[in-house]
Image (tube, rainbow, N blue to C red; front, top):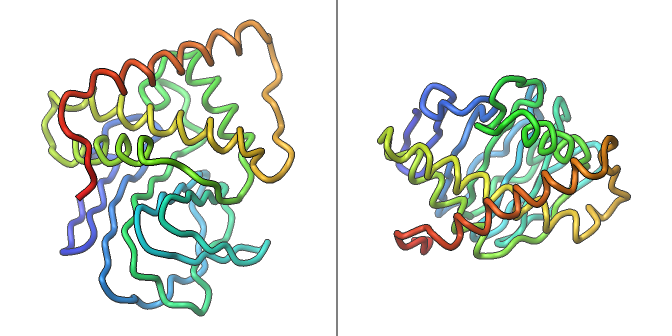
Length: 214
């Protein structure tokens, strides 16, 4: 784990969740130097802006992201802040390695395959999320950062519920581009979606500690 006054980065050694490479929280009260163009090998990166504003550049142009919005960059896709300084904001970001096989994000084989297909259907873009997903993501981050092995199930559950909710929102907003639907057995896909939705609903109903964002 790497920790600075306004930045906490949890690495694979701390997370111990196959496929989840990094989970971090960044809070800044002043603009920082620009982030150079870079890529993440085989990893999808998702940034969830809680408050404030950020700007990202890819080969498709500029993406202005404000509080309550999500930005996704694809594996090996160059992205950065361009010439602009990083904004005054609070955000949580994470990277998921798409080549993991066994125990992907702590899921069963069928659900892991289903979730990976959904992530592989993603396009580089931004979309709107809500306070429920942001609170679940914050709860997952805090549980992971607590370094308590007894919190690991809660951490994974809250993270997965937040990810599922955000993917549902992205797909309902159409990805702002045509979405490639997963191929395969339609009945299996429906069953997997039902399982993931049920899991997310259960976690939302049974999180006992406050999830307000400070």
